[in-house]
Image (cartoon, rainbow, N blue to C red; front, side, top):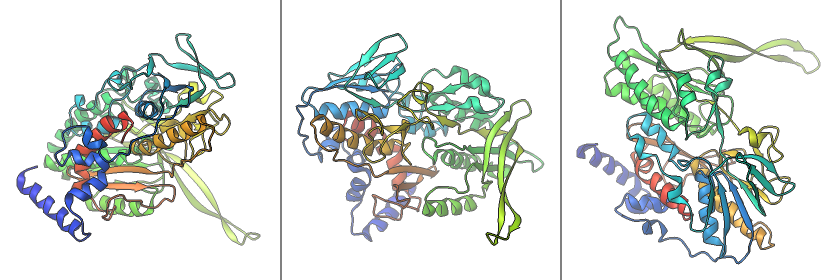
Length: 495
């Protein structure tokens, strides 16, 4: 951003804030907690810690095993080491890059960040005294308080925390069966070989975000050189399952739109969103704001369309399109019946961004700690297992109504640790997770709508401004504050 643009945005922000009786520094601190102080000139992690109250360490002893060493698992391990005098913690995680910064994949996919900006080594974030077993758990035995790894190691525990994350289920799409299931990080060669190099992409893996940027540039160039009024078709999907960050399918659409405008090619492109549901967002206020943004940007959209197949050879996406029709009159109910209908709808594409269905890893879903839906069933407030009192779950794998975002984990891991330590001390569980979820919805290169909400399904803004308005200050938070707050705040157990 040039100085003229920057000064204009700062002036607008200051005017907005002054009406609330707040300075820019105070507002950004409130919005980004301690992480925003990094934007304002702080240079080290101590700036993040200055507002933290000292923790009183518990003398309770127990063997704690955490299955999964991503953001949720490693942050929890770090927080536990701060709360226990003699922590005995083992994290079981096979992937050396498990703590890579997944929210940054969208920015890599739009050419804003480089791939190396989001890749981190797990072992750089292991809390002192925490043991790492570089293996994968393949069997859970909650009756005997033990798990077994792929290499045959049996690990016993007093308390178990399940933080495995989820899997991206590309194999359920007809035509992409060979893609299999994937994790966001790790070796996804099989997946990307199946997707190919002809317009299909997905930001949901690290390598996929790089490929998305490559494909985006290819088809933007095609739009730039299009003739005879033929529009290049950009399709974006949102599946029928819960997903990691519900706003991500729209973020990459907005960013593609921004890059098309930047290239002078927007008039030669058609951008269409295909969500499985009947709204842009589950919170009505945010739905209304996104609806107006879509109209402003001249996007197209078709509700209740779930991607079920891809014909790669002919470049056709196939959706299960659903609708309802009025049926015969019911004289008893004194109303007309409603008949649900659906059909397979074929849509040609040039560029197809797939947001895959997500599922619990089989070793969790098919075990006694899982459930019929696959996820680990926990009390949504305490995060403790509904059947096994010495098991907790956190992050994407936990079966809670909302919360598959890093922002949710930031609230969850403090609740979990407070409750686990209390339980180790023989006390009642004191902490409750209220369902807080945050989605920094990128609407352009330079603006973000910060969608915050909880189980009330109402906006719960932490910033004293209208949360449905796109703002540069939220872009600043997204691009500059949230990563250090995650990597050096949460992963130290302090943010």
